[in-house]
Length: 505
Image 1: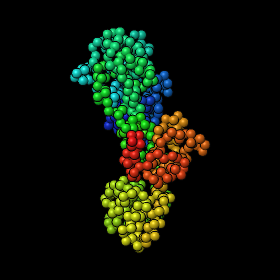
Image 2 (image 1 turned 135 degrees about the vertical axis):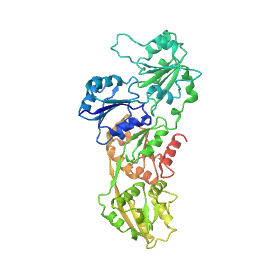
Image 3 (image 1 turned 90 degrees about the vertical axis):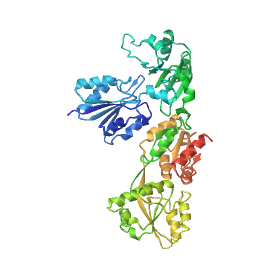
């Protein structure tokens, strides 16, 4: 039974520019065949059962020829799979989507086209260049800068482009930039016409240079601009200095490693990316339920005996309530219990389950919780403390000294992850990482284990270390890392604030 193929435009590079329908296709795919220019971040939305195949073509470096790609799409669809052909930009704007559609028609395979945001529009917009403007341009032309080399004659009307179009956008034109500019000028376009090159548009690697038709080649060579890039020619380029916005963000171009678990990295990645950073997700930990649920189940069966319930992390909250619900119980069994948490993020997560915290200390350390309890009469009170295996002993020890009866119950385990170790080590060797962020002691310890026993000092040379708090920072220093940034409070927003302040004091 034949499957179906979706030719999906992945957008220009910023994963946030994928269409809603495009994202739905990725989530439902059996097979995803993706390009060099399609953001790999989008693949996180794929099912764990999806087969993911890279067929990227970069300049003259072709992993697969177009004919091979066509045959692969047909083969997978004939096996009954839902196949997503994920293409950078838009499938039908110099994306060879039309050719792939023709192949599918000949093979009798049903297909759909899902348009994407083309870099011809997005890259200029992110560079602050409007393609049309009532004062400067009433028409736009999209032109390939790299025509089919097998054609005997160019079908580009250079004279009409040079004399009759307000704004011209050339895609894939860096290699042939000299010929493009010479042809425009030889057909009547004034050498002083503004021109711009935008490389890696809409991504944290975006670079824009501006000049004129007769200077842009020299400027390109001086800046060493290479593909992928778009060329914009027209008087609208002059508006960039007034409108530019994307490249002015405080962390623009900074390459920052996020070591948090994959499930919890989202907020930090989103914030850093929004500030302009290129985030490299390298989860060094994953958080899983405890192997031995008997102590937790015993506590859940005896909730009526507890006076206090204390959480030290979001994970503790989630795993506690997940097990509570799995046992067929609900929050009514907690109506008599007072609560304490460490940190506003933990308090917020607890509120998601319907509970306001009775104690939220000013400082986000275990010692601060102990200090907060000094105002409470907890002698003889029973406290349930669901948290991670091998957590710091400060809380149970100090609360016990105050006369409390503490049940320190393991609800989750932090395990090491090494999936991205090769990628990160390669980037470290290439010196293409600016900063590494740590959000817990376990992320520090497991990252340290990724590094080789010898030569790690050289790999880490010049790299800034950012810690979410003093406990994590202390762990990092004990393991030989120089810590440059420590957030004032144990929160993701405060960590991002500290990073921005470091680069812009």
